[in-house]
Image (tube, rainbow, N blue to C red):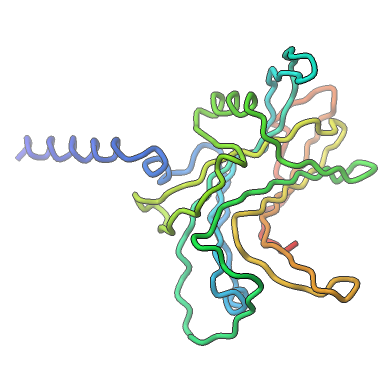
Length: 249
């Protein structure tokens, strides 16, 4: 009956409209997002049975001019900040085909596992490699959310339990949405590397130069280059260089 079909369509639309923002919008990529799938090798699962890796979606590396308050004077002044907006989802790992595998227990697992992100930006073409850590800048975060038309959290506000694993496209998929912010970058630098940790609990031990064990963390790495110069800052020139990859470092 035509009337029943119309009511069913209306109820279906209403059901999706009533979903929380984090679940309703999690089903589709946002404009410009690069999607990096979780990668777990058989060797990793053998050595670390509780390993998890998130699907990461991040937008292009961008810059924005923000009026920031100088804590020394209390006055506002314009400043360019760089930022990387991202979302992350936990996906279920496929079942393994064997039991009773050997385990390398490096630490007691956290239950439930926590999401604690850390972002490092490294300028690699300067006289000395310059390393910049993600910063908490509330005024910049507000301007970024207004510009991106999305509610991203800082690297402190997003800290919390990892959401339950859900298949891609599931209506109950829960996301973590955050943004990394960097200040006072060397404007003469043209090549950068961004290291992202916290998206996996993968860890391994290797022998260090002194023969002692060194722990490495599974990290997502993306390189960038900017063909402009310090006198003509233009964010569209910040381009990915190569593909993002999972590494241990």
